[in-house]
Length: 400
Ligand SMILES: Nc1nc2c(ncn2[C@@H]2O[C@H](COP(=O)(O)OP(=O)(O)OP(=O)(O)O)[C@@H](O)[C@H]2O)c(=O)[nH]1
Ligand SMILES: [Mg+2]
Image 1 (tube, rainbow, N blue to C red):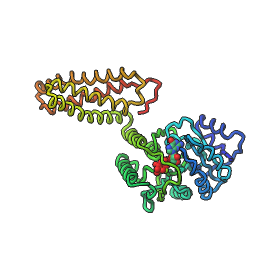
Image 2 (cartoon, rainbow, N blue to C red):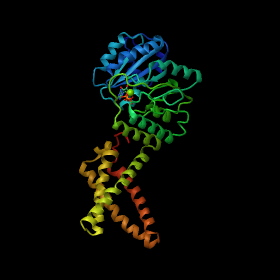
Image 3 (tube, rainbow, N blue to C red):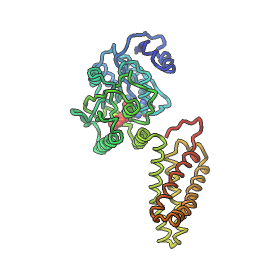
Image 4 (tube, helix red, strand yellow):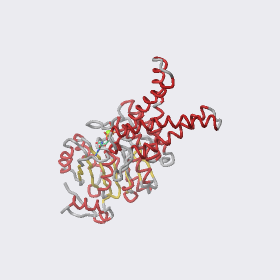
């Protein structure tokens, strides 16, 4: 395996990266500018590596290219890559990460930091992205003066036949549509914002701006880096060559979170989710009230207070697991749940007199007044939960 480096591009990298790259190249020869770096994130892809390297080597000039694998595998994929790299004319590096920080998105960003080409091409290892398209991506970028070239399954001539099953097609089509709606102005020129295949001009990349969460690194790039001209190259998305898919339900949840963070920012996203959880609490509240009052014959006032406890329990379970999972270490379980219930009930104590004041003092209608108290209480409860119950510790990074 040969590894080469351009000393000029090395000097343009941040100090930490320069040190790491120098550490990687050691005694190896120094050379001129590379045209392209192909960054391939891998997670247990051992049976795809040989074909991928063969096809990349046939499609790209060895002297102008490097391939960087960023690997989080738990199997022997890194060894398989090293072995296959011996017979590959293109220089190959493998950067294996033990912690797998940031998953697929984190791996791509890591590969971008290590890349030395004028263009960085990101593609999957499972051959769903045909390697032969790489020269077309870069050719289109150079011809049209673009900063970003997206391999698109939806532009004219492209297709997504390789997406296995109707369910995957519906999810992919639906999330593409929702994403385009949420980021209408950034994505006017983009038909396939969920694509994992793209080429970015290195000089237009601001890698330190990127904070990817999960799979959708292209969206992160378009929204945060705002590249100049964007063009698309249609391609036909292939079935997976070998191995298993790593996309999962958890990835889907991460994607929704990523969309919220990118679109609304961290605090507004939390408030939105807090509101949705609060809204979902209406259901257990009503069911409990009905069961206690209608079925068990409990008087409606104590029944309402008890039903409120059921709703607070429901809200706590969802808030604690979905919204503030990463901040749970700020207090013990009992510390969190006690404060949450106290807040939920203080809400009752404050809302009832406020309601009376608005109805008899300000002569508002009961329903309107009730709505006002609910909104005031919602904002107050969110701020107390966010700033007091689940406060961030000063050295703890804010993740969501
Ligand atoms: N480094 C790294 N690579 C990952 C990780 N998760 C997935 N990958 C790689 O990212 C690429 C895309 O993952 P896939 O499992 O193919 O996802 P997908 O294309 O949405 O799913 P399929 O259509 O079923 O293949 C593949 O090359 C994976 O090996 C990860 O956590 N770390
Ligand atoms: Mg795949």
